[in-house]
Length: 228
Ligand code: SAM
Image (cartoon, rainbow, N blue to C red; front, side, top):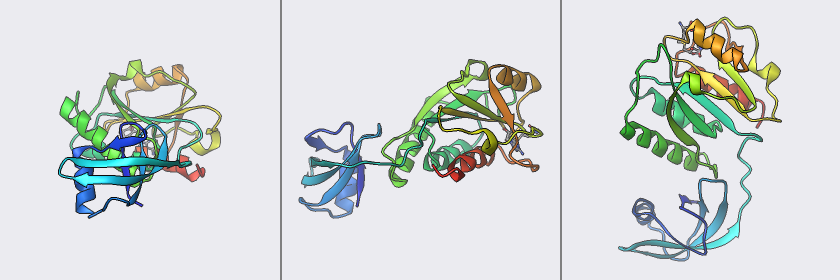
C-alpha cells in the first residue's frame, strides 16, 4: 500500500505538491486506499477523495498500530564527515531505527561545519528513508554541536578502536541509548577521556579499523541484531 507523510492526522488531509504529484504519477484515482503517517509515530489508513491540478485530498480512516520502533529511543551522535558520507549514514541509520541524529564537531572532524542546505538535505533523506522503511517516526537530524556539549540520557557507547567492551554485552533496552561514532581521523585521547568521564562506555567494533561511515552502521547493526 502506498504510504504518504502528512503534517498531522486529521479528518481531511491535503497533501503537499510533491506528494500530490507522486500520486498522479502512480495514476491513483479517488477511492484508492493509502497509508498515512505523521513522522511522530501516528499512522492510519486513508482514502483518496480528490486528485486534480489543485492537489490531493485524503480522508482519514482506521488508525493502524505501527510496531517498528525500538523499545527506547536511539541517538546516533556522528562526527561531521566529508562529501556525501553523512547522507549514506542518515539513510541507512534511519532504516536501522535511529530516532535522533546528533551531528558532532570534533577535534579531527573531516570538515569543521556543514551548511544549512546540507542539513535540510539530510532531513529530507531521513524523511524519505523512514517512509521507505515503513516507520511511522521520522528521525530528527540536529545541527552540529561541539562534542563537549553532548549530554547523556540513559546509556552511552563510544566506538573507539582498541577498546575491550562490546556493545552486545552491555546493551539493555530499559533506557534510551546514545551511540557515538568518530571522524576518519578518530577521537583525540582528550575527547575519549571527556566522554568516558561523562558516562559513555568505550566499545570495540572488532579488530579491524572501519571507515568513519561504516562504523556507525556496525554499531546500529549490533542494535538491530538484538532483535528490536
Ligand atoms: N585512526 C583512527 C583511530 O585510531 O581512532 C581511526 C578512526 S576510524 C577510521 C573512524 C571511527 O570509526 C573511529 O573514531 C571510531 O568511532 C570508529 N571505529 C572504526 N573502527 C573501529 C573499531 N574497530 N572499533 C571501534 N570503533 C571503530
